[in-house]
Image (cartoon, rainbow, N blue to C red; front, side):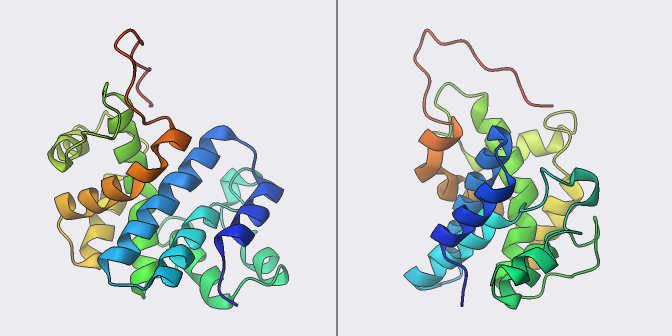
Amino acid sequence: MKLTLERARELLAETTDDPKLLVHATNVRGCMEAFACRFGQPPDEVEHWGAVGHLHDYDYQRFPEEHLAHTESELLAAGVDPADVRAILSHGWGICNDVKPETDLEKSLYCADELSGLVWAAALMRPGGISDLEPRSVVKKFKDKRFAAKCSREVIRRGAELLGLDLADAIAVCIEGMKPHAAETGLLPRPATAAAPVPPP
């Protein structure tokens, strides 16, 4: 059975309580929902893609140095569809495994994992949060390798290429996907009197 968002939340809650990782899961979920729409998926598949995105870092909090090494057997034992498990594994391609993204879902997850972090960091710095974030602003941040340096530019670029999108288009998809979740991820507009947050490393 395909992964549902409800089941993805249940499974992630068993392994993850770090607020930053939960924000990241929500961001990737939003990006995946938007990519599903971009590729013409029906509503049930939009939720499915989002569920895969939500669960993608299932083992990261417990095993950051062995990421994805403890994912396959546990998720299969939990009844997750093997195709969804493979999709989750594929976001580690060239980083911690050799599972190459093949489907649009897998390619989208590979791209969204790193790109969502860059978009989130860029939006976090703006008084308007993600509400008025333009792709060109994120492209500028992409070129500044000191900004959100942990977000791999190589992976982002390769992910966009796998999807047949230029960088700005991929960024635009992620921005739109993350907007509906802004309240959960700290990207709502800030009051005029609020101090700017510290940029993420």
